[in-house]
Image (tube, rainbow, N blue to C red):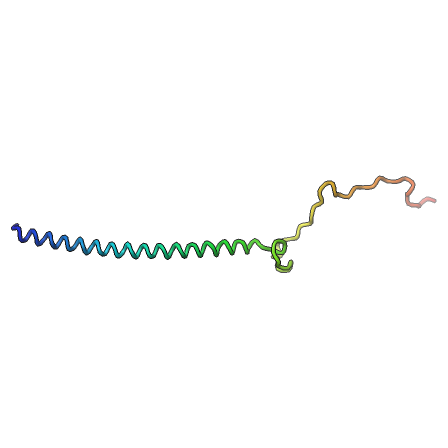
Amino acid sequence: MDDGTRSDDLRAGIADLRDLILGLRKDLVASREDTALLRELLAVQAARIQELETRQGQNSRNSSKPPSSDPPWSKRRKRRRPPSEKKRKRPVDPTLRASGSA
């Protein structure tokens, strides 16, 4: 090989590498733009999911919804009285028996 052919091959190789680098730069810029758009979309979707989860947990007890909007499978639970409020049986008074044998 003479020096002219060798330098032409090097110039062609350098031009190919420049084209490759320029193409990779364009791809990198496009990928960064796509990544930015996807991050924005992810933030919007995360906010929407949070809103829907919050709304799903609402019922007539923790919102201004009427009880008729509660799902049929959620039964209202009776309020349990603490032990101090339970009804206590009165002691039986022998003088107040029913008059059946008088």
